[in-house]
Length: 429
Figure 1 (cartoon, rainbow, N blue to C red):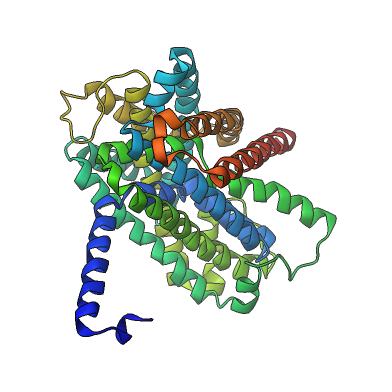
Figure 2: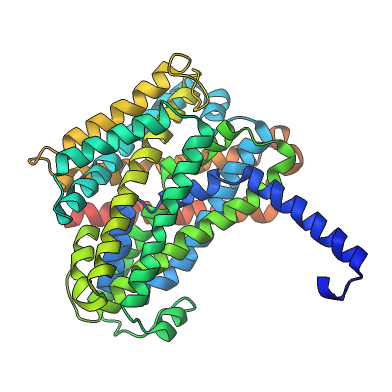
């Protein structure tokens, strides 16, 4: 029975009830979507662009798998926070001790600094592509971040970042202008096909595929979704709506990733043009998709770099506040959460300063970041699963049998993928 077949009175009740649920959904909307979309930072865009350029449409099949894994892990994190009223880092400190907290925070901060330097470098390089002076652009990013985060509040930050998410629409335009084989692209969501599976191709598929997994499911993301939801102060009764948003966020981020891959697969892979970075993609697709499509792709990278700088810096500041039990909220003034805001700004200044220093080896930074991520992501999920399996802590929202065993399987997959990516990276460099 559809709403149109109901009586006018029942139709009014149906739409009234639907409207209430929609309002409740939007009252919790933000943390999961922003966390998932921030996974598509500059390094993420580069990974997807390289994946499409080197592997073509078949890598889209893995994107479906990654979306499921992202949805499962994000749902656990946001459910834990909404039910307990505490962030993941706070709970790790309470349940597993100070030593665990110090180790996790140190690893998180070092890994995040590597990500921030890569994002800052993307901002610098993209500015150069558009013939803009890199140093002023990078400084402008720091100043804008300061005004939004330190001078604003939670609501302003969430609104600004959600608006920034709209810039990912440019990848849809770039993909359509590339005139891809849509039948082949959509078919590869079901199973990988359409290319010659040579030993070299299979090797590249495994290596780059692990990179796609690693750039989407991150250690900082697990802490940020928890802390940002905690800062939003979502009520326990709305946990179902937060779970729904976590699934929506996972779908949305890889929805845009799909078009990033399609844009480069339809142009660079088809014409066998080598690619090593996302910024390169903005220039390389222009002869095939048009000047505007290439320019918009570059704007998307610039926006992704900016989002990554803000969100990843915030994730470290949030984790610091929770791990060490000090005030840390976007609704607090600078004086009330001085350490929180100082750490946020300090990361940006260091990352932008390093990015502007020409002698820095990004390869070494990427290797160090991947090493730390490979060893810290499995423990994070270990703590997350232990906490969400704790009935005394979670009550009726404890993991059910499916969630428990599926999350364990996901953790094993993510752990193996992280170690595999690490081994390949060390061999390659």
